[in-house]
Length: 166
Image (cartoon, helix red, strand yellow):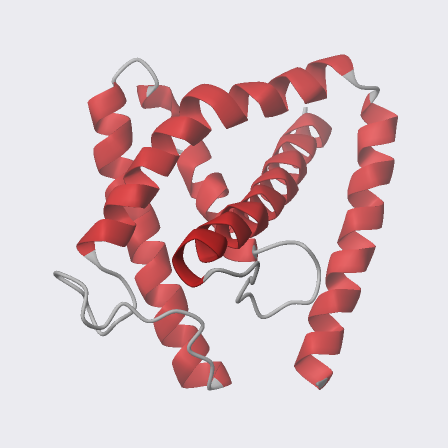
């Protein structure tokens, strides 16, 4: 059973980290006219989306109540974004996003619009992405998934270490 939980966590983290990367590429293309991701790692992933998705797994028990999913997603992921932005700036000297000038922003780290979008994202995660991840886990050989997750962990760790050294 612990193996299945680890698989679920790993698949969810990487699936959403990678989807978050592509979401931001597309978003930046529409807002800035170029494909650019402002993550701090080099690989095609944004771990804040992976961590946010793991938080959203905690509220999956409210799946039959979309409004509750939206509200909890709004606050949980908004809090994650605010804390992450603050810590990246204070500990790493990086400001990877800035919502100053946006309505109801808190230090430029989070704003009403971003939290609203993440609330919608929580609905998309709960009703589309998470069930897709569960289908992958159910249909693909568990040893293959563990092998792929191991490779991803090694690459991700290497990327993280290279980023810290740089």
